[in-house]
Length: 279
Image (cartoon, rainbow, N blue to C red; front, side):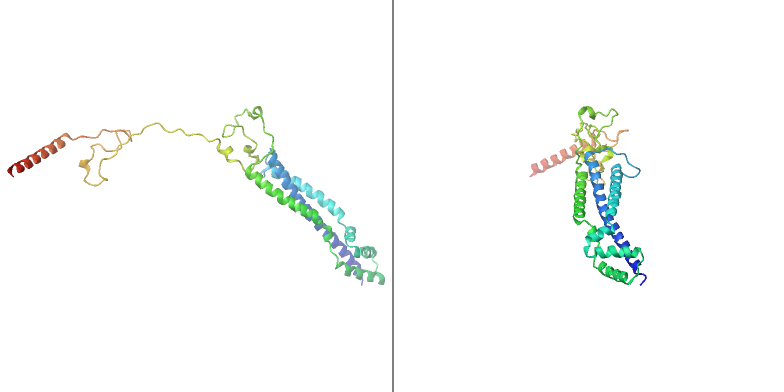
């Protein structure tokens, strides 16, 4: 069959694609690990980085280093993940595949070559490109990604940093840039951290002075504000005197009404005494 050499060439291209996939898998996982490590380093050392448009400076730096790591590792692994490497991890097909590739390159369709093509095609169905994947390396990279992710979240929430503490002289800003509590503005307060400590935002707690001014108000003497109680109320029971909405006032006094009440009481007592005398 004249298409048997093409079958071998197609098999070789499939092996090369598997090498690309394995190299890409390793490169992606390791690039993510590098991204997280760089981002964590910027966070812990409080490295001031200017933002790049809508993106944080640390994110841009970590993405750049991670992309470089991906390109380097992918190029190296593709260089080594070749058909020869596939033959080395699949020794049962190594010699036959190598001979079949040479025959296919020469377009050999002799009866012996056709038998070789059939034999290699059958053996390739029992082989695997899993040997391209370094499981121990890949597993270690995944563990690093998980650990660094957890540490990054904890460091961001707790505001952890291992940056050197500046002395009193270096804390002077000279431009009035100070934290709410009176201290100098740290790198974290300058926006280099996504999360900020509550004390650095609110400042130091202070005692609140109690007020010393006395305010006097007038309270109506009416009984529950019922209708008809005006005669038992103070003459002046409002809350407004002149232009002052709240002011102290003196209760009114009706002398004539009180004297009349006293006369009624005296006459009532005289009648009682006269009744007792008659008895």
